[in-house]
Length: 96
Image 1 (cartoon, helix red, strand yellow):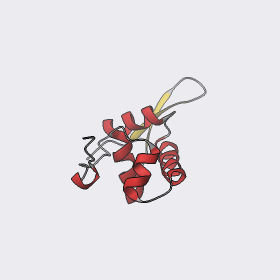
Image 2: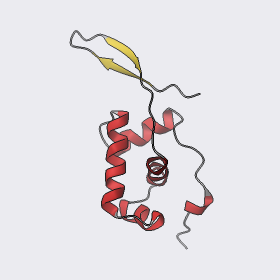
Image 3: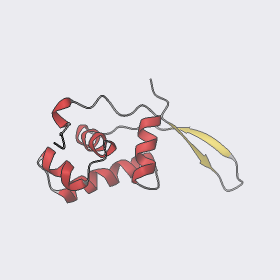
Image 4: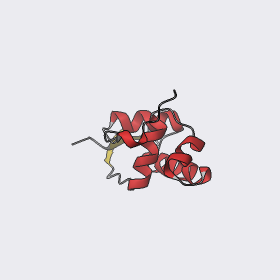
């Protein structure tokens, strides 16, 4: 079971652990898996048959849930905390 606790630095500089029960939707998980493979919002949108702005919204929702600063930090966080399932081969696109 992954440890989904987040450490916050308070006003006095103290660091405290706060257990965060992160729940990503199925679609958020799909989007994050594809983004973690290096795909752009446009590429993810084509694979999932949704609009690129919807992909960006899912990425932003996950970023806010994980309290991460940017896309790279978000991906590092979800990998470190074991939040990425195995990526189904249906989503793997050959560049050839």
